Length: 113
Image (cartoon, rainbow, N blue to C red; front, top):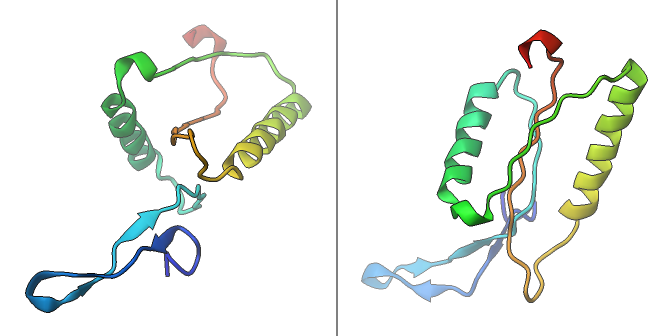
């Protein structure tokens, strides 16, 4: 199913143990979104594991708070989605390496900052 949907691509078959036939698969780096309810803990744990495994010198992190109207919140989300789509559409090419990105947006109390 993952190969059929383009998340994996089958590589050339090879002979495995005891004459078995192995088909290795290559991940295509496709992004996905899944709405399964509140998966906050699992998503944060996955992000933390990937982020801390990356070389320190190559990690980038930022945080901001902004005063936004409801319309501005929607505009911000829409622009982030457009940027995601633009870069998500780029595929493997010479000199390109895969990078991960995690974004979370939520209302915050200005007294907490």
